[in-house]
Structure formats: C-alpha cells, structure tokens
Length: 127
Image 1 (spheres, helix red, strand yellow):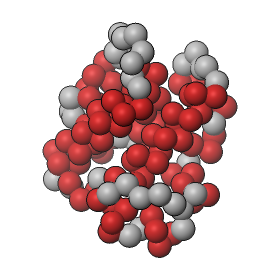
Image 2 (spheres, helix red, strand yellow; image 1 turned 180 degrees about the vertical axis):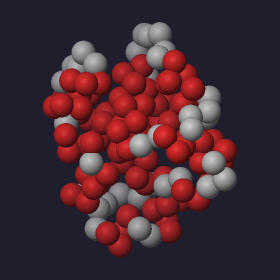
Image 3 (spheres, helix red, strand yellow; image 1 turned 90 degrees about the horizontal axis):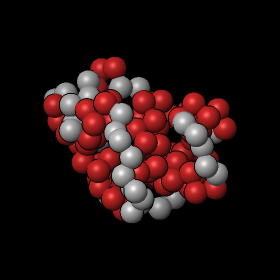
C-alpha cells in the first residue's frame, strides 16, 4: 500500500458514504477513483470505492443504481492510467485522459448486451 496522504474533505465524505448523489456526476466518480487509487493499492481501492458507492446509492433510496462491472472496470482503467504516468493532480489526469471523462469509455471494451446484463450489474464480468 502507498504511504498515506492527507484526504481531501470531499474524499472523506465520499468514503463515509455521505456524498449527495444528486450532485455527484461522472467526473466526480472519476476524481474519487483517482484520489483513492493514488493512496491505496488496487484491491483496497476497489473495496473502499465500491462500499462507498453502495452506501451513497442506498442513502439516495436507489440501491439498484449501483453497477458492479461499470464501477470496477472504470477503477481498472483509472488505475492503469495512473500506473502508466504520474500526475500532479486530477486536472492533469483529466486533461491527459479525456476518454475517461465520458461515461461511454467502457463501450470500447464491452458489448452493450454484456454491460447491460443483470449479472454485470451484480458481479464483475470481463468484456
């Protein structure tokens, strides 16, 4: 595991499952993934990120909104990009990886019927 870095306040709110789902957009998801993956190894980051999203969805009264494959696959893409290059901050990461700032980024990896399947929603599936 990486040496601990101080947590931005919004990351701590996210990890506590207290993020307001109504104002939590795709770019915010990617930024939280970036921040978690800069601080933890991949398995630890996946556990923390998935747990937080599930709490946020449940608090919003929409637990079925959580999608396991989309969540883990996006984390893997962010993690891969972080392994390829060091970024000073999220702005630099976002500028260098504009494809990840689009929800459609996984369309290059998954067939629509695969990613929309019920099994993909509840269990991570490979493309």
